[in-house]
View 1 (cartoon, rainbow over the protein chains, first blue to last red):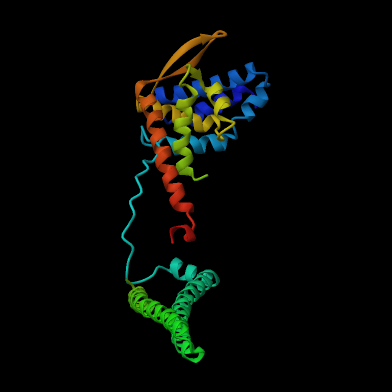
View 2: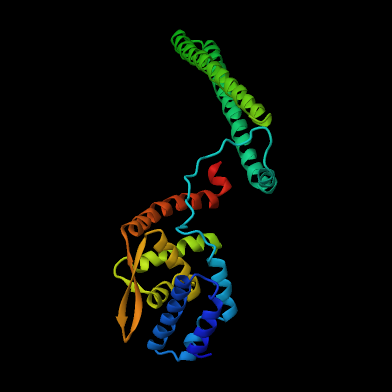
Length: 197
Length: 106
């Protein structure tokens, strides 16, 4: 199609528009073709690069109703929404199911850490107990050796061990109480979480 | 790309194409082409819209024995470009929200 043919069709297409509007359209396309030709395109190529007549007509019809001054849709600041507390959304349920291997293994690790805490406490009791028992044994052993000085020395050492053991026991009782309290706290939290906050 | 987003981006791209020096239709298309697909038929309504919104001014210059329309950015057009900057910051925040991972928020 030559430029003259194109312009003729365009004028027909825009004939129903107000004169001024139609003129602007034809001038615009005419300028586009001239500039393309100036850049080295043939007239034919320049006309073809504008698209088919039907496409142009569709564009013109579509855009003649477009409100003026329309711009980029305003983006509003993201405000975190209060999540519905009672019912989990579907995506959350899917994530819980899909993420099972991850969260379950993490849960297992946390539980074993908690159990090892008890193991540490029990072994500390055992250590304190063995110190106390060895104190008694040492104190008693002195009598079998006979000499007064040695009896006194062994008895002293035994009493020191016994005293350390008693001291350790009072500390350990406090530690046990704290750990029991901690257990209660965790259990309460878990129950609350399962009930849905 | 979403048609609404592309439409908004094209408006800004046209303003960006004339922000340093006045330009004409054919050159505006060539300048935007590497970033967004734009045809002669899409550019026209955008130019009209921006003109109606007082973001640019149109004037004719004689060139090779014919008239060529040049477009000059207005103060409102520059404001629009500045606004776009802040919008992109907001978009970035939204992008982070949309693409965030479940494990990180836990």
